[in-house]
Image 1 (cartoon, helix red, strand yellow):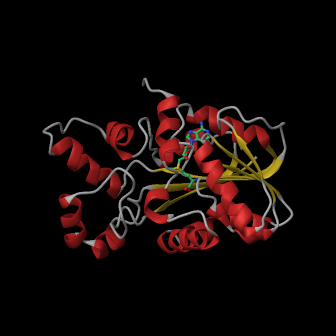
Image 2 (cartoon, rainbow, N blue to C red; image 1 turned 30 degrees about the vertical axis):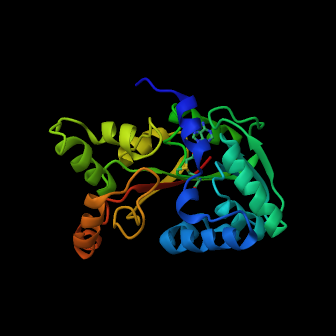
Image 3 (cartoon, rainbow, N blue to C red; image 1 turned 90 degrees about the horizontal axis):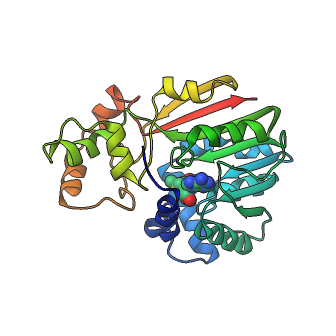
Length: 268
Ligand SMILES: C[S@@+](CC[C@H](N)C(=O)[O-])C[C@H]1O[C@@H](n2cnc3c(N)ncnc32)[C@H](O)[C@@H]1O
């Protein structure tokens, strides 16, 4: 598929993930409020990341975004490094760390070409990033390369069979009388930055085949359940209507493996 990393960068330079919806300014209280909303909407991040376990460990976060998770690693006492493709995210995270009087080492870096030596980190953490970059396998190879032997990757990428994907398919394929469009087409063109991908567990297993003991988990998100604003690209009457009739209890009970977030924990 043909697409352009510059377009990905431009999309996220315009606003970091969640910035328009959840960050009112760059004061200490604004950052604390954004963190509160993040962990209220996505409490599973805390279980998945286990920030407190990484005190004293050398940790790399790929794509710091608004810096909430990065702050948690810093508060846990990690020896912390953060990278991002956009100056916007680095500026937001830098401002947060100044407000909180915390330290990290941030750099403007492409996840497909990390400027770190081999076997450098105890943990590489990345939430919602590696499916956005054009060459996802190259970025995962980089995660592997920079991890110490025995080091751990904790990564979230998007899952193909999700309620978010089905909703977008109804909106952009069925309602446009183009039912032959695949979920892959839909994520690529309509979810976030152009070129966004999603993976099945089998495909993720393939991506992480070099790693030992990979564990996969699917999370139903606030997007799948329509319990929040729907992201930077999506609003309108249809979405408001869907929100009022959305069968959340049925989805929680029968479609719990149809969430957008696919997490992977694996060791080198
Ligand atoms: C959905 S946001 C996730 C942000 C953050 N981790 C969070 O949880 O809010 C996706 C991010 O991926 C970043 N990104 C895309 N391609 C990248 C690359 N090649 N290297 C580093 N970051 C990249 C974009 O800058 C964007 O901020």
